[in-house]
Image: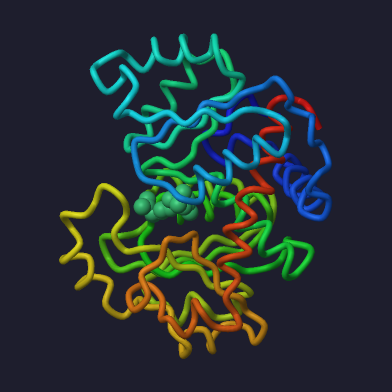
Amino acid sequence: MPEHLISIADLAEGQLESILALALQLESTPHAHRDALSGKSIGLYFEKSSTRTRVSFEVGMAQLGGQPIFLSNRDLQIGRGETIADTARVLSRYVDLLMLRTFEHRAVVEMAEHATVPVINGLTDELHPCQALADLMTVHQEFGELRGRKVAYIGDGNNVAHSLMIACARAGVDFSIASPPGYEVADKYLDLARGLGADTGAGIETGADPHAAVGGADAVYSDVWTSMGQEKEQEQRLADFDGYTVDDDLMSRAKGHAIYLHCLPCHRGEEVTASVVDGPRSRVFDQAENRMHTQKALMLRLLDRA
Ligand code: CP
Ligand code: NVA
């Protein structure tokens, strides 16, 4: 296993599949490994709001016999100017794992450079690798073998899109994204995904046409148009993303068995209609549950306890 999980690309070939296999096992036997992390603790640091990430890590760590500790920039001295490096060095003396949700991606990278315990990226402005683990687990639950499947993402080329694209590339899943002009995925992550896809056979396609993107897709995914920290752009984004709503018509252009995915929280009537997210193809609450199974697997692996 890598020392930290900052990006899905930190996982070597086979490690992603191995975490998913353990997560599937944990789902079917929730009490397995229940004392595996006894005496261990994880610091959970948040600069942004969270429902799923916070609760799934807290409960997941407790289920493994360990202790989660919620930390926020509103309370820590980091909010008053203590450096990231010193915070990393100090927290490493107390906890066995650190999870961070920050605005700047660089903050998580810097924390990992100075921490002496494994650091997990719990979402930055650029990446959301823990979400991508749960996303692929959900596709696996539905269809079994991941290789050769296709995921289509409609909307903003944001943190969730970047990690999903990289995860698909690593797992041999074709990935197609349709974004309005100006909201495409970052070139550095596209190049990274295409490099990984060259090894696994995953095709990575970008474009602006949602109809083209969902053709042949096994799963259709959308995320909010305005991410945390972008609230001032909301009005402009609502206009720019017009035509990028996942609705029943768009779903009908994917494969007949296609499922709908969303990391949540969602805005019904914007990136997805209520009829899709609350409809029979939606797997969004399984996906939310899978955050806990995959993160339990990740913590066990990072601490070499499974
Ligand atoms: N999907 C996700 O990360 O949700 P939270 O923001 O509630 O943690
Ligand atoms: N892209 C969203 C994901 C929230 C889980 C955001 O960053 O706000």
